[in-house]
Image (cartoon, rainbow, N blue to C red; front, top):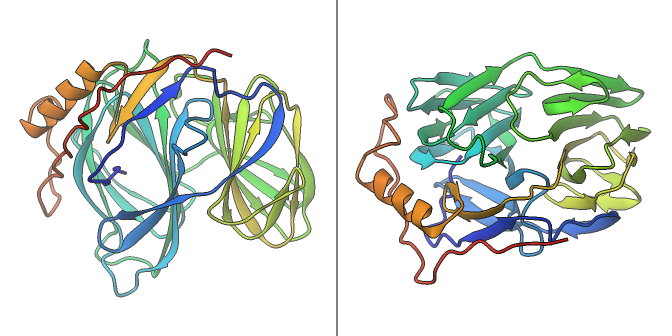
Length: 321
């Protein structure tokens, strides 16, 4: 999924200066962003007070939207570099096309994982005949320097491992949780899990104390470490936890995101993650001149134009814990 903001603002992220080395309860409010004509998303990362959680660098939550008489999601071809995109649905379908030739319809609880590596372009759209409701999350994972120029590729996993407990089914998107490991390709120590909770569930999730974590509420009402978390909000949890208390006040859905704090300094602008302004400028020029990012075939419409770069220099800044 693209960042469609026509006034794209650079985000300086990475490093460890904002990493909280102890358990905290920091509730993040979303920023509302239009995505095409009929979809509005709630952007949780990057946030004014929180840029990353582990290698997770971008989180949008959208829906549930009634798109019975609407075109639904319509995101024209656009580029990415230096990151992975994670498409995750609770309702509806998204048709993915990319410049490697991949074509896949992603459905609820299936993993659409696109590794941009050095360069890729893709489009996303609701199929012409689609379900009434669209509800999901789109996330980006920053690639570390050693792997950010890998060959672009796409994975579609329809059968993912689960962890169960009374009142809980946890589907593991990326990384591992309580011994269950996702088949999705990862390049840093990371975890992403979708938690389906039944009303009255009261449990403790096992965590890695070296990871920092956050929880995104998808639906229902939950209390996470005693904090009420409502749909479309995210609770940042810091590091140093071995378990996480969760109680469901209703049937509910959460996403658990975590990983080792990302040490490298990054610049994120529009749909690119780089290390320097020169890299971002080159990527924008390459996209606008039709080189490097390839062509998405089969989409009914033209590609997105990149916004203008801001007048101020793009500089990564260190975050030293």
